[in-house]
Amino acid sequence: MATTTIKKIYSDIDLSFNRNPVTGDVTISYDEQAVLRSVRNLLLTNRYERLFQPNVGSNLTGLLFENTGPEMESVIATEIVSLGNPMTRFVVEFTSWLQEKV
Image 1 (cartoon, rainbow, N blue to C red):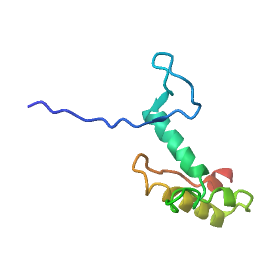
Image 2: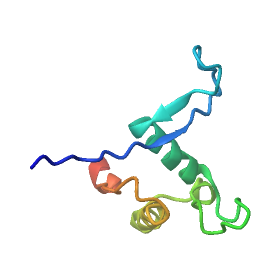
Image 3: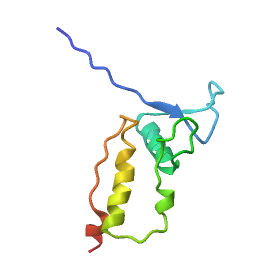
């Protein structure tokens, strides 16, 4: 009995809005590039910035000039981990960047 595996293909519009030379449409990014761009967009989007979707985004721009320390590291980690809820395209794995400085 042969088994087939279905691979999910993630796609997104390329935000550089370049034209596809063959079709003339906007180019499309696939898989890893599409997921990286969507995560970046979520990180740079503030909460309440998208209409009717108040929980989409993060508050990282509000934390930009805060003092660094263990408390701030946990706040930033909480913001990043909360992004994984609306999307199942990625899993957050990270280590403490404060321990690497010492």
